[in-house]
Image (cartoon, rainbow, N blue to C red):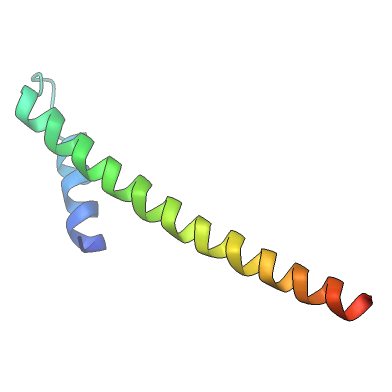
Amino acid sequence: MEAGHVRERLHQAMHRGSRKASEEEVAEVAAVVLAVVAEVTAELAEVIAELAARLEALEKRAS
């Protein structure tokens, strides 16, 4: 999913006006939000793994 697509979908959802969103629209926005959360979670997991590897290397050098 491209960042521009996600941004556009969220922008449209936020600026629909006073009418109530349909269940389908809510489901679509929820899917986009879940995709963003999944990507952020994956990135965070990579950062944590890299930090753990660096910490382990530092501890080995200190020993």
